[in-house]
Length: 327
Image (cartoon, rainbow, N blue to C red; front, side, top):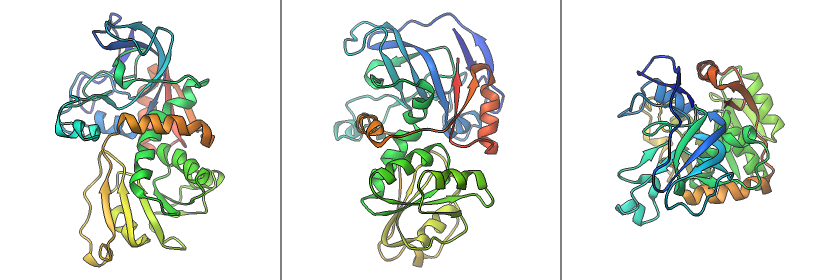
């Protein structure tokens, strides 16, 4: 197999040829067809997440076909197309797992962070954390759903039932979530970096009611705001944009420090909450919803060997939607 490997934090990924891995009990081996590139991959490569494990193969928005099934696996068979997300395994018995909050498991593993991920031709996955994709005809278009879509969906659930939804940072997650919001009959208010015309054009093309820079106030108070950009200064900006009783959801795994802000913009029962990881229930819900909502992803394809270029282009904002690696 081939894999793009992070040997040390801050270094470029290195192409490595390895023996083909074999699945253990309860595992599957998947031949990767496509793996989207997530901002979390940047946080892994840049060492912005704690307890980084190196060497590691990044990548956690994986679509591929099962080619070997490990002992004890019955729900998936060879040839089945599956999606593999960020959450790679949970203990199943801690207080969080026992209460329906496996996304907060005390001893989890994460694809592309603590176990090798999808920037490769093959990946080993826990079969219980892989999802059959029987209706998937385009692996490239589907790959971004496995994190950008899933985390976006969890964020939207946390945001509540309000009609006016603000999306700060119009990248991979927001361009998917905007389509879900419109399908549900909500109004999307898209906030981008100052002067980011292409992102604003994409937001408008996907039915956003209003687009503007993150420094602007929306034309009407928001019921909720979801922040995907890893910029702490957006938290007070979003608090100023939401109505009384509104909620600000921080959807990223990493964010720069939140600056000091006056209590007055939090008062009147506004809330700030974060979203961590996902549950398998989130995945089942969203993967069933996506085809009904007619989700269409905007993608830029890179060969596996150009993973470093894809990461650099993501960091610089040189494409719209999501980058996808194809072995």
